[in-house]
Image 1 (cartoon, rainbow, N blue to C red):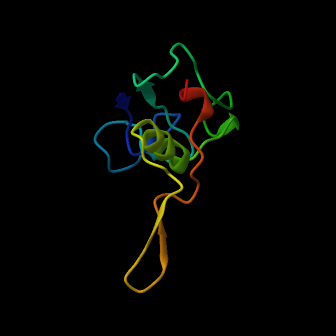
Image 2 (tube, rainbow, N blue to C red):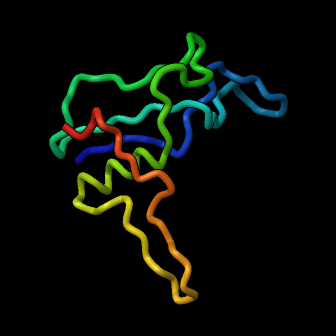
Length: 105
């Protein structure tokens, strides 16, 4: 399994924040790209889309929980599993255990 991602996407437009020595692209949590290959993943597909400016998802929005549920499933770990803490409270691996179906093969 090969995965390439960052913790955030980047702003769709180059920003020129005052005090910065050169223009750049800041963190953007509304949209990001992830490359996922191997582990039986069907290749050659793009899942989801943003608006024409890259600001927000308009087709098939997915969450970090869906992503990690996919990784857990491919590793043979049930993403719906939960544990009971010493205080007797349930602790879930992820809040949404739904893997990304297009990546499951």
